[in-house]
Length: 254
Image (tube, rainbow, N blue to C red):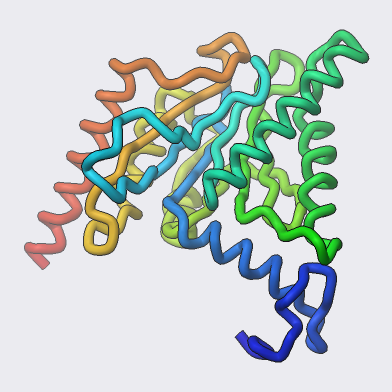
């Protein structure tokens, strides 16, 4: 990066001469150094997949989950610094609970993302604060509006997606997602495709061990965000491993 060390990266409230906010870029770098997280919007719901890097064999399986529920009708996955992610998810849950208390109905996904985006953006304009080093993918489904998928990045920018990827394998994952006919795939189909993509973008040289997290929200779950059932999870992992082995065999032949 140009201008590093010239004093323009000491606070989030200052632009560099070329119009950059380095503290926000550093926060985005924290996301890029994290495990891959993808979400795909199918015809009847959303599927989330997380490549949770295991840095020690002493870690207990199932801890420090990166797939989170914000409310019964909204779920998501986070990439970046886990401690920052917990703070952002806690704020999202507070926003959802406050809206339900006041209006007696669940908060729409778009409104939640706009409120959460403003909160995250607040941390990018004050010198006494630092930006959150996290990107969060959020999804919902209902009978009227169907599936909705949105992302909020460390700058507080909110975007809607049909398929989204963040983290280390972002570019390769996006390439694989673009090959899918997402509008014709059910959540059950997408669970296998998401697992396949996570396995394909995993770097076995740099990160030998990882734990796959899968969750979904849609017609199958009656609009509630849930972890993918174990039988379907095992089926997806088997499908992904077989696809990866077939790809390796083709490379060896060539």
